[in-house]
Length: 558
View 1 (cartoon, rainbow, N blue to C red):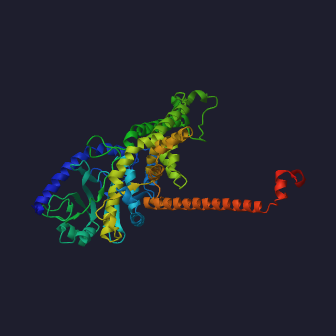
View 2: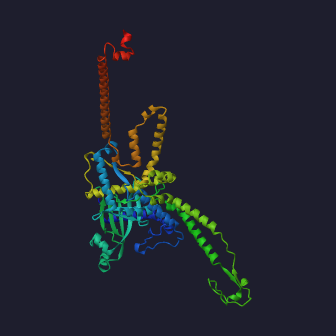
View 3: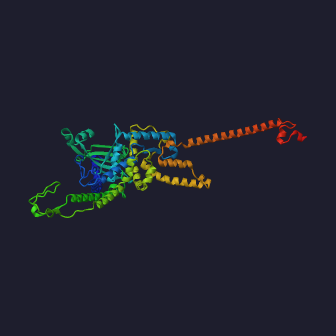
């Protein structure tokens, strides 16, 4: 049964209130993260964009800021680099994936999608999402259709949205707060949908800012043609007024989390793990600054009689006194300040290393600096195998909650815009599979190649003493599996039909060559026999050649 406007808005406000309570329990922790690690993102407690100022008061050392920046850049470079192919399309059917028409169609669609991504704000939004999950543990972005650039991507910051989960334990709901000027609201939603206050402000002062709410959640009305409902309404609007009610065929929100505890909605990232060390670093930096100041400008003690004369303690200052008054006893340090700054600096360096280790700086800095074709996945594994093992679950979650939904969403938008060519007949009704071939994804997959390489190497060593052991090894399947693990293009391997045809042709050629060799050998044999017969026919009965051959002469025979 379709709800009326009043019932729908009431239910939306109730759902928003419940989700806000869950979010507000996380906000104190998020505020600490913003205060010490990311002062430029996050809005809490109703902060408006035009009123938000960076929170830099607690930052004395920028080590955590640099580590966070390196982590976000490394994720972008190693997982979704705009300069290299990081995913490919295929099918779940191995035999179907080897068809030439399927391969060509998948490659064509992949190139089209990469072009659309590069021409939109997709990668800019992705970098902001990586920044958010590195600090707050949760990120969010929306992908909407756009007539100019096919799609529009927007990253959201912590505190401006609430998330909700469905029965499948996946994020399927988002309520967010946004602010728009009166002029923009009238242009976007129409004057008839806006409140009187907005319409009047649009006429008098169109730059007046109003607060809006936006809800995206699964559609519960089966009569609707969309799967997800989208509702805009004014925060101060009337009970029977909604700005817009529409929907989407697919969920337009990607809300990845770094790691999740149990069934929590919001995640935790490296920023949470490094927060204690970051606070300690700020305290140590403050102590070092205070110690340095005391050494450079120590507290002084002076005789009471100098109170009225004045003491110049600045560099170059002159204090006038009577000759022989004993200035050494009248002005001196209150206590001897001789601090060992070396030990303090050693402690700070150790804390910095802990922060960088928690934020994966050694791994991601290498990726950010060495993102080039010659940087192989094998090199990454050999240098940072333990980090790749720890990062594995994170990459799997990001693929599941961020990249795969984003690719599906982009595919649907491009399909609606008729930018996807018709698929081959063999793909009719088949689901398309996404495989990730980024440098980090390949590094994860390459860990599985070690077992394959060890088995083949061991088989080769056994074959030296027992050649028949190689009968166990399927070379074709081993090569195909290895190519899949390293993310090699499907085009470099021939299909099974092509392989069998080439082998049949090669076998036929070898049989022909063998037959020709055998025929030539028979001809040579016959030629030798004919030559021998000719030689015998020319022998002189009285001796001659035969006698010479036998080592006798005519006289001896007779």
